[in-house]
Image (cartoon, rainbow, N blue to C red; front, side, top):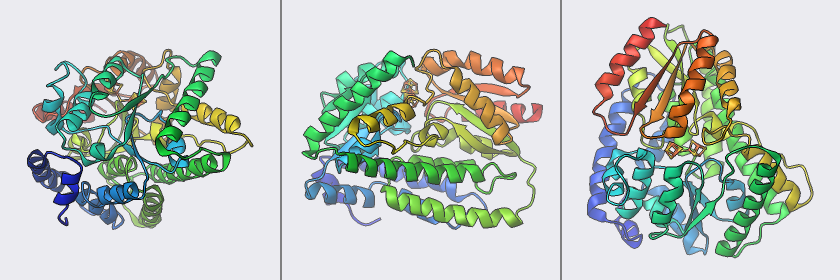
Length: 419
Ligand code: BJ8
């Protein structure tokens, strides 16, 4: 990686602490990713993106800002990126998946809280995430209680706009969500000085839909037995989707898919168990569960998570001639995401059952970040439905530490034997 210290300094980062972070990532990445055998050539681009994770993309953001552009950080797949793109701002996903940030988060948050929340707050207050440091505004949302209250603390460090996400999906909730999108548009227009027009919003819709289509194409290829790409590599691509330049990302994913289509023609059976992961999101660099599963005779073939299908399923329609029409289209697509923060949330159960068939799944692992109550409570519904369908399922609750890795491996091993 080139020398980016001046750039990081200009972002007011804690360089010493950041050095410590930079020192652990290559080893972690090497151990988890580069040891995989027979990886597609197309993964070289994504290796490069990781090697430059705090470099080249940050440089691009800085150049955008030098030209007067704005950078907006998000934490949830309900925030419509289309609006951000329409206002010529850049969107970056800020969910954090490393234990490195948890300690700083615990300085201002209770310890018995979801690690994802502690990590993103810690990343900001420790000044060790250049994406966070590049943001002119971040967008929170009222999903779980932990996040909802964390915005108040985060707002002391960076301007936060909170979108009030309904918790049910009745007509009045759709109307409320449309109002929230309108408020969000106003806020983004105020920040950027750019008007969101029908034309620019349609362009934003195009960009986001093309990203969804590329990811869907990748996931469709995973339906083949054996999958032509590991779950680890697919997870990495989903994680990178949240911050890479969208058009380049789409091109690289499509190039990779071309290669995978060729692979499928010649590959031989591997006899691995096909596993679905469902549950809480896995933010970069949380590769723990995939790594454990794929170190055993199993492959992860689909993730029903926000770093999986919930991020890309369903496109936004471009039909309509007014901003109001397009806002309705956005609300329709986004309120179709089935997060456990909704009640009831039967459609998530249906999604899981559908994916079991579509991806030819042998067993399901419910992955729950510690202290995430919505997903933990919803597990009962998931378990009941899968048992009824005759599909083995286990629940694994874990955080970002590595202490329980051995214990999880033993449980997954036993689960695979039982399938
Ligand atoms: S749409 S899953 S990205 S809220 S932070 S809810 S893990 S306790 S991230 Fe999420 Fe949006 Fe839902 Fe998806 Fe639980 Fe942690 Fe809360 Fe979390």
